[in-house]
Amino acid sequence: MSQQTRRIILTLIMVIILFIFLTNIAYATTLVEPSRFIFTLKPGERITEAIKVTNTQDTEAEFVAVIYDWTLDDLDRLITFKAGSREDTLEELIKFNPRRFKLAPGKSQYVRFTLTAPKNGKWMERKGIIFFEQETPPAENEIGAAIVTQVGTTIYLSFTETINAFRFFGSKVEAPPEGPPFAILDLAHEGLGHIR
Image 1 (spheres, rainbow, N blue to C red):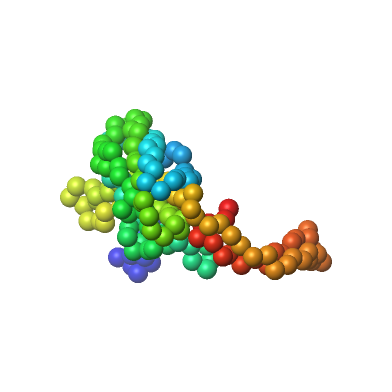
Image 2 (image 1 turned 90 degrees about the vertical axis):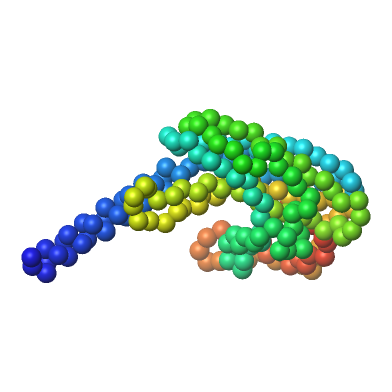
């Protein structure tokens, strides 16, 4: 077999493996609604809400609800952490029902969650992402890696005692030679809550 024939065969095998891998990822789809919750609670108050999870795949899937802490890096990319890793965690304040469940193709499940505000403490805004995780193992009798798909809902929890404040230092409008003008605000965040 010539060197060129080997390269063609190797390239063909790599394309087939890539196609199979990407096809498996395409099937690993889930719909989660709504994508965000924003709550403001009094100390000790409790609220229960529901998230609708829909299996849009053509096979049965098992899901696990997991809460994560998160932040954004300097480039606004999502960085997740194990719940309880950050000061603004929801870890001790949230409960799920059900946490683990299976869904047939095209079926939906409402996952209820309850948030309980602490009775005292630091009144900084808390946030987390509830990911519905699905692990897809490699095909039987094949070499491969398990793929964990995460689809989530963001939760913000502030309190009636949370201070939302910022200091305004000034503003200016810049008009670049190309493109529309834009405003620049000079602000400093001084509160304990996220200002949206």
